[in-house]
Picture 1 (cartoon, rainbow, N blue to C red):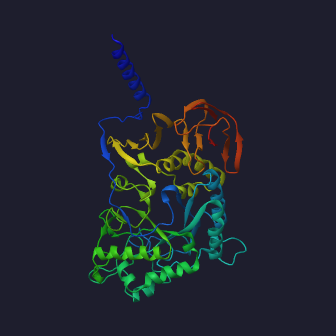
Picture 2: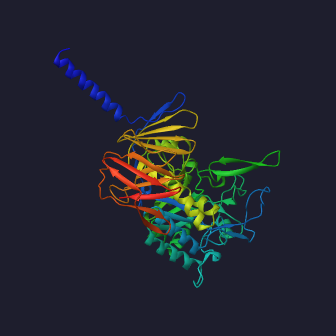
Picture 3: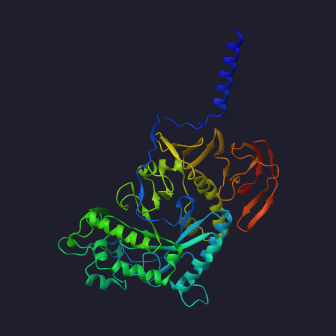
Length: 498
């Protein structure tokens, strides 16, 4: 073997070894996978978002439910029955916000209040001009004063508090109901009969916009509470079609989505959406972003049209494979789309666990297993989504990032190095610091060694703290040697290393 051939062979072997060492494809799917490639849409904003929702934990705090009798078809609501169920007062909401801020290490947060008005969630629409007095703080004049206090106080904890409202429903006990009947802005059939929706009657966006009534509603709301200072609001059930129930032979009901919204008024489906666009842009002119419930059936225009920077329910692969996270993102993400990130459900968590200490432990676990990882992924470009038709999916992002979504769990690798698996999490937290890492293990780990991403060159002077709802405490059960981190975590322990 001559010297030149030997050198070439050594170089080839070295290159092959290096390729294996840096191979980012550490995850594999079962079965025969199908690949979707990311292609950026020709996107443009019709509004000017004030918040970057892709770098924010967005959630809802469910304060109160207005109870009702099942008046329509024995299933659906037409008015309140005078009762309510309180899940969280204004003061308790503030305590939850403090806990979330500690456990998210100051990550920007937006929390929408559900059930803040009248007797609670879905109470007295289309009106929203009084607070829910069962929620107010002792000593405050009324609930609106308490809500103003919460919206102001929460800013100290990296949290924007705003409102969850509905522009579509109209209940018979609303202070505005008789006026809306007289003004003829409720949806009607072609024959002129009021249309029952799944919740109450329905407002015709186009008719209400033409008569200036929705503008009056929104102006009044902004005069009552500092929504403009918050710069965001959540519009629930912002449907393009009427979800209309029909009786079935077995005594149940089925929902059929019908468009246009109000045949009586003669507006087309396109005019209904145009009115929605007018509403969103009207709020935008006031300095308020609009987020909404879901992509399907609530969007405006086409994929390239930016009206909503964030959707509460987000599982539309068309959006996910054609828009960046800062152009559209979601709160609850489902199915295959979870390969590009998922988030904890703040609303469900605090509602199902009224004990704040128990809720805090669940929040910490779910944050580290979902939103923490998503915050890292949202800062990188998507390249491919690989799926196997069995609910599993693999995400390919730039900079050597790979994810595996399987059985509701999200695993993460960088440059072929596992950062998150079923046992533990070690994820960069860029909002904390350029080289900050968060480690967490639900069941605990003993002297586990991680290879750190190459861009994180650790210092021997690195410090760490255990993260708790009460604050941070020094942590020393870790060591750094070169690009390797060895750490021991107790069950449920969260640690930030900086």
